[in-house]
Amino acid sequence: MSSDWPLYEVFVRGKRGLNHVHVGSLHAADDEMALHHARDLYTRRNEGVSIWVVKAADITASSPDEKDPFFAPSGDKVYRHPTFYDIPDNVPHM
Amino acid sequence: MSLELKFEETIAHDQRIEPRDWVPDAYRSTMVRMIAQHAHSEIIGMQPEGNWITRAPSLRRKAILLAKVQDEAGHGLYLYSAAETLGADRGELTEKLIAGKQKYSSIFNYPTLTFADVGVIGWLVDGAAICNQVPLCRSSYGPYARAMIRICKEESFHQRQGYELLMTMMRGTPEQREMVQEAVNRWWWPSLMMFGPPDADSSHTAQSMAWKVKRHTNDELRQRFVDMTVPQAEALGVTLPDPELKWNAARGHHDFGEIDWAEFKQVVSGNGPCNAQRVAHRKAAHDDGAWVREAAAAHARKIDERQRSAA
Image: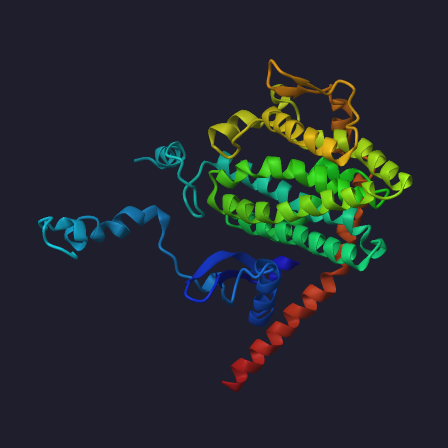
């Protein structure tokens, strides 16, 4: 039963200079097999130069149910954005 | 805001639903049904063409066909992966397919009798699949939409290799040209059936459109496919086997003949030419692979234990 094999999430770096991006998941018996399966499944056409795999069970995620309170601390801090500040048009390079 | 309202607002604003968001039970079961059926189609779809891998006429064609069938496996896995984000269990999905409790596309229940079928499947069957799948890249369920984007990119190779194969055969002997025409005759109508029952009889379409799970009706997509395919058939030099097929200037579309829905119902309900064979083959592959899955799991356990005791 493939469900006996743990679920892994797969992250691929498309090319040098880019972050790894989540591309999907797969089942594998161990970490090494997960890497090989990830290569065969997600990079058949040179889509990646580096792969991370991590057991889905080892990921801690924020909960969608509490997303409003969880992200509230950044909601009322407009002064963190450059557009908050009025600078006259005649000041260059700002 | 209630959970249901939040869900509806997300859909109304054309935003994506993501894993672990609250969704109505009916949305979840619709998505699991759609995605599983799609995944099963990719996996079962490996068989008709796989039939020709060992008998491909050249190393070039064999390498192409292998890559294509490997892609189908990949597409199935992207989709199972999307279904799992809704809480479906991959092993259970396979068991439901084998038990006949979940469906796959009726097209794969037709046999591949000649090598020309490999070309026609790429041209017509994958062409119809692309028509169906391009709008699904904007499906409201995020993981499904993302899987579809990946799949659509790869389907383009599938269609082009098929058409190129057919062009090569059409430049060949009269027997080869006849083989292409004969394959087109067999696959044309089943390809039109791939879009599902007419809108008036489609039980899921209205709700799926409201949830933006589907973006066009079966009949709209079927018409688009016919309009796309007619000039391709002309360029290839084959005749589509429908005497009623003709351009309708008033509609701006091609008219075409009545589809044999009785045949469609027969094939969907399990009585097509290859239904039993396809499912039996899938079951045998799954059963024969059991020892490999068990051995790999046992090996992983042993390594894990060894590392623990060494630490």
